[in-house]
Amino acid sequence: MSYSSWFQAHGEKHKKIIDKLSHLNDDELIKYFRFDNMVKEEADFCPLYAKNKKCHDNEELNCYFCACPNFRFKDEGFETIEERTLFSTCGIDSKDGSQYISDTAIHQNCAGCFVPHSEAYIKKHFTRDWFEAMSKVNKHE
Image 1: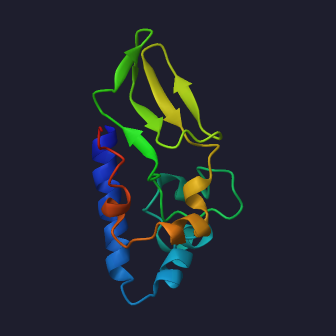
Image 2: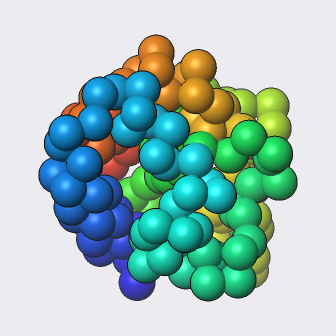
């Protein structure tokens, strides 16, 4: 699955949840996306939920910004570095991020970064339109 196809499908799943919960205020909606609640209420949102597993080892994980607004991807790659294609990066160069490097590819590894999963960050950048929040993710400026 390409980054683009995952991105589109995930955004559509996010929208269905938002539409279903239109009666909630913003704070209630953000709380709804807490990991423990999402595992119970939205089991199909993430394949890790079936194993009650988090993608980030953070006690207060909030899944509202699953797919970080700071993540950048390009399916065909940004550039070639030492015979490897760079497919994804971090837009803020988080000190907690790293790179996964294979023989042919370089991908951003966000597992150590919690920036978009805190409720303070979510409230600061909140919009009910996930695609709007993620508007820079696949733009190649």
